[in-house]
Image 1 (cartoon, one colour):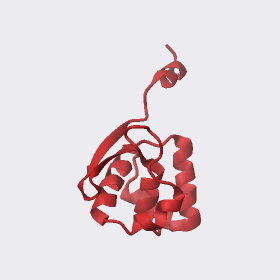
Image 2: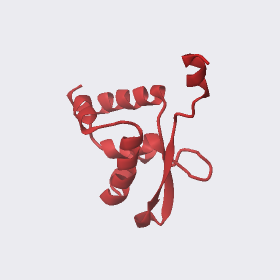
Image 3: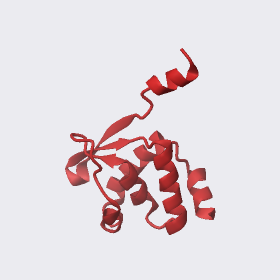
Image 4: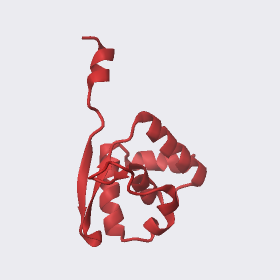
Length: 111
């Protein structure tokens, strides 16, 4: 089997369900595709680092039952005003699943 065939056959977009007691619900956090990661980073460069955690949550949080996005860009403002513990729990999982480090965030901030 070629590398191309192995890459095509791979299930390489893991997700994880996170219990958010502050909201009395569970939220699934998924890995981004390379294209989605580029779009996320471009949006951060354009808009700046304001509300960075909420931006990553919007980009990665889905309803665990349907797989549909849990939030939209229209939710950024109020999501940023929610519990730092709740948003932080989702952010931490999203950052881990998507390989976003503090160094990555600092690099985006420079741009």
